[in-house]
Image 1 (cartoon, rainbow, N blue to C red):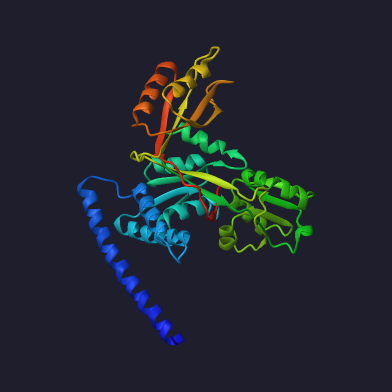
Image 2: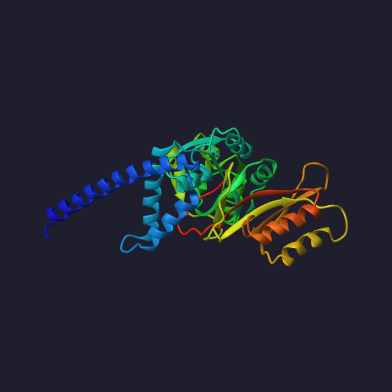
Length: 362
């Protein structure tokens, strides 16, 4: 077939795709009406995940991850037609949290930046945004403490979790590594690139900033400065990338959570997050942990954080396999309330799938 004929065939296919997208948008409008009549929320991330999984499983020559990316934007645009979706994230623009929010909700959502993790939660609590996105844990550096403190200190629930691969880049207008005297970034990326910095920029001063985007802003005005940030930050602020993938571990993932007023319905493949405190006394933690063992519940993660109420007083955070509506999880929660001064349910939500595409956090 001649080139002109092939191009005409592509044009015809694109026209058919547009017609089908228009038909999809009309059906989505009907779905929105049905949801309003049933008093159901417009946004259903679990339904979205099911659709993406089904379509990715049917992928052929067109790669599965590309199918997900395309349909995520299609679904984002259709959702925007039903109801403008506002999402809060730790700003400013160009942070890994910004990139993560866009990867989860798509480009059609409306994004509002907050200067702190507390600000993200406050925006959702005041209903200035329907959802908030915050990083909770990095595979190299562990927990994000301020995000965990904000989660425990507020009344919002975890609605979803997702993981993204974090690719750290060195952004600078300096001509080369030998010209760099200062490296700016958030503490998490600095930690994730500790060995690379020691090997390649051992003489440079490491300067902590509130966010990776703030680091890029510092580097813009510093002729001998560089920032560790994302490719998105490079695009938004016009600072060239001198080195890519400078993190110490090739596989560097950050886990994000979506916080909302409502939690997810039971799917059969869920996690539950809780916080609890202990009464003073020998074996107190062991007695609490035995509850999970007796109810045949697997703890996938547990850590402690200062309670901020009095010195050396701690709150424990745990992630359980199962949903709060599962019989054994419900029993365990009741038993914990009888043993602990404080038990707080932080949300039940579908387990995240391990990400395969590059993107980012903090």
